[in-house]
Image 1 (cartoon, rainbow, N blue to C red):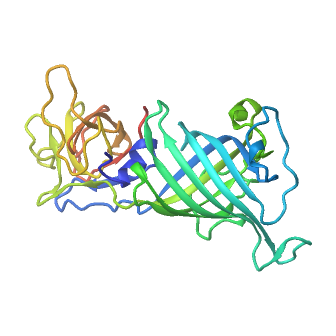
Image 2: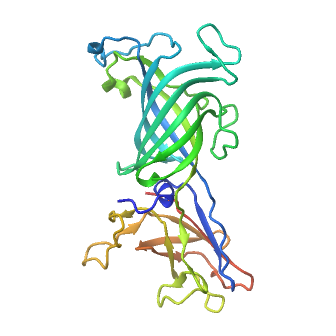
Image 3: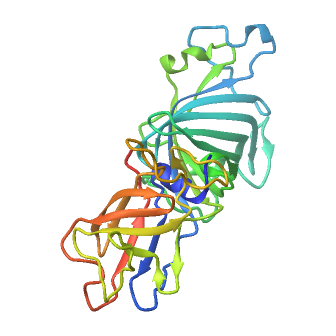
Length: 342
């Protein structure tokens, strides 16, 4: 079971939700950003158009097909392959159900008159997996395709000359994305083509062989919960691993030392832990603790703090550069970002 949503979005594919805190006398915390960006690259997208009513012919033609020209109110089912999440290799599927509704302030015959430009009403379902095929979770969006992207949408590495379009409402998700909300849009990046339009007679078993279009999706997500560093009366719960005494200015961390940070909301464990079940205790010889998703750490002005392990909410990292946090007179800060590398 997935234990928490917020870090799941983060831990699985490196959506950078960064938590920071100061190792100072008042132990003040920096605020965790409220939203994060999810970018999905989808390839081999084929839109199968409802261009006939004889169900006996559905998905029977092994050859490459071409759908009849799009008409208003026509239905489409589309399928594509998720190949990357936030620039990292991933797997999964995009399934879309769409009905055309061509709208324009200056419509052509057969289109609808409206104050906005839109082309369809679409449901996008993203079934996301890690590169090894491990399930992460689903995201479900309700979308007005075509036209302008949502006002205020931020994030995404979309190049100039390829504006985002479509107005996506993130209605929710499952697994790592349980309870997520947000907004988004999509774009066909320069040099790529949009979804290939095919007849419903085409056998989808040949979708990858025949090929399809590529689309880049950008979502601004608001998780249900967020990673939180445990707060104590003396500040953030960061300790020296050898004796679990707090890291303070009086007893600062040193270069090469292993530190432990206590946190909640770090997402799913490997192996998984049951809903509302305690983390596993000390394992048998030769086996492993359930650990949080692998992460990359950065600490003290960019000096790296290498991820070592995470056990039941405790995370250990090792300062791998010269100088120690808390060693200077001024307030030093530690930041960590959950950014798995595999």
